[in-house]
Length: 419
Image (tube, rainbow, N blue to C red; front, side):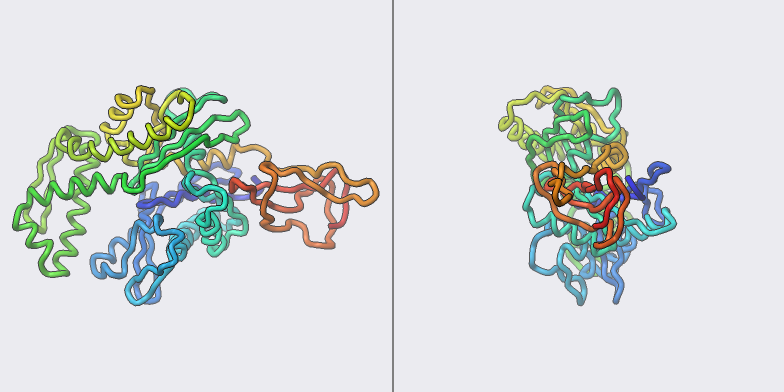
């Protein structure tokens, strides 16, 4: 690592970021917030695009100018209308990255050239969504953007208990707010963990559990709540937003307690719910994730040593209980379940070792510089030495992006020269 690195996990419902410097790591928090994540949301306010919590606050007054959960739209060519403007999905990704980058630069007290962006394992080589993520990062001002598969990052995350050993295969069970992803990752001693296979369920996440709980709360509210939610547009919008916040509070409370008591003030509704009822509401969603894992395991003749649980939805006790009972393998938790991917990526950025390559033997009559690249090929990102400029022996000459999305530096041989 030759300078500060901003690591960003852009998620369907929330995003998180860590600044990595020679002094260590620092979570990039949303201004005015003590949370380790930002809502992946935008809202247009005149000529401005608000990001995160300010966007969520403004949506109460102008829902048509608000949009969240646009990550699944990446790669679509149909613009997303927001108020009187329209944006492509990658435009909205860039808005979120720009807000995070601005806060990171404040922490760094200076510009940051290098960004590591997380992408699902489903964004394989040649997937245009990889290029769109890189484009969004470059538009924000990063001159070096590299991609890291989310399950690889998760495998680097600090875990509760003993770390995984080289050669072991881990089932990364990533249950986020919007989607579920499963991947088999082989742990490597040199830090180059390998994804053996992956699978996903697009309509399987914390929001689907929220939807089940929301339906139950609407039943409890009866005809009075239904009338309010389908009546005056402004009133209905405010009430729907308050109902969403109630859903999140109840679900999070029942992750730690047996009973939750709360209120939907706008409707005068008092809510009392037991964890057992929430479990029955959410069990069908959890079972969808098991179907996905079994599908993945059936395609690969490997025996994972454990299921590594990451993602905010894994905080629910139901999830671990379901995984252990259904798959029959031990369950391990990341130390920070909700932000495991970004912390793992930060550890990768610190520990991934020397990713530079000296040139291979040159023709004695000409002295070209040649390099063998992992994976066989790469894309030139930038020259570090200008053409016709002198360089020292062993100096870094260029940065290349490998086929797996990581960056690799090309260095000079043991003699000085002119490029």
